[in-house]
Image (cartoon, rainbow, N blue to C red; front, top):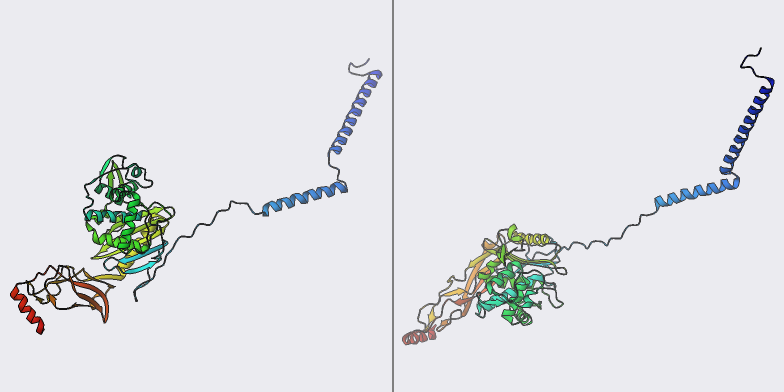
Length: 447
């Protein structure tokens, strides 16, 4: 009797056949798979090995070249070097002044006009808005001659209204007093105000420019030419540091009542408040002016003045890189001047320094005074060694007009005359009585 799970001979044969076929199929599949993998893999023959080596070498070379090749960057033009000007001491025993970051400059003593130091003092420079110093001076002269009054109203033209650059913001067709225009030009550097003043005083901008050049020659500016009242760039517009110091000195000396406006910190017109661009006014209390200037071609410029203990200095710098640089340069020059020099005022203009006999006059003596203050700039500490000598050229005979030059005041340092000031009559000296004239005539015969 067979067990239910036993196989018969026929069944065993079928099973063995199925298993064998299955094994053969698996074997064939394995062989095919290995063949396909072998075909897909690179054939490392000598030729392929050589190509692979070359490719690897090229890749390494390319990588090396990439790592060592210079990085391409945008070329940047080198910055223009900072300007620097070095002046020289004009007095033996006085140290050299500091170098300052400008193209040209000058430092002078206001009382004597003497240059203390400078670099390129006669070099032609663009004045920019420092031109307005001459504009103001010409207007001040017109006021002094009563051709214009501070209260005169000026009608603002379209040309003035359209003026480019810094402005006072005047409105075309309105009427503005001369005093307001002056303050707008001085404090705000208003080109519209300067143009309006030029048209009022000169009849036109061109006519005013002619007046500016005539005035420049009269006061001793030898290398300046003005083409407009504003300082806007022009091919023919130029000046020098020395000429600007000459102009500033004349303005301060001749028009002190107007010069005080240059120390105003701000000015308001048309409800617009604008500060004075001269930053030295807030940095040094002894500074009381004068005028800034700037254009792209001129750089930053500044004419400044300060007074300490009765001594006034004037500096003018041109071509700085920034407002701060022009202020730093100006302040360094002023500090140098005050530290190294002193102005000795030996006699005042109002001092009666001599009373010689007056012949044939209503009075017996003539009061004589210096034509101006007798002031001498000396190295600090040397004022004590100065000596004053007064001489009268001849016997004084009436009549004589007030201010008649009759002698000279000399200041000596040792045996050297360092200053000369004319000696003049303090007042008019009329003739005396007939008897006095006869008596003095006889006296002159025997004197």
